[in-house]
Image (cartoon, helix red, strand yellow):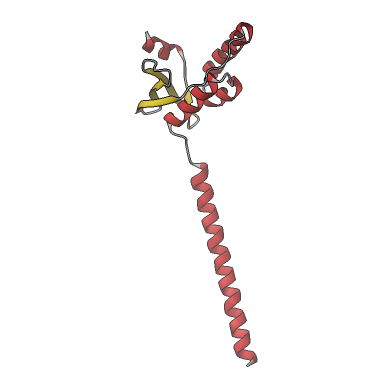
Length: 140
């Protein structure tokens, strides 16, 4: 009887070790997948638009490149001086185009404005809104 009990405990120990290895492998796979996730251009554009419409410029800077962040600093100063109030807007994505490391996201608002476009580019693997000179020229 002692031998049977010993074998049974040995099997339990082996199953525990195998479960531990499987859990570790599953955890590593989860980390790799989670860390490689990149938000889609339209997700970044919506977050940027929401933050700027509500004058949360520091948050908006998380979703744009350095040149655009400088523009946001200027806009924040202007807003502060003008005492303008933020608007509550909903944004509706109408089209997304991706061309390599550049993208454009077209949208309308709940105010019924004409379709507008925000441009993005990949910066260190992440999509960022880019209001650079080349994008401003596209708008004119």
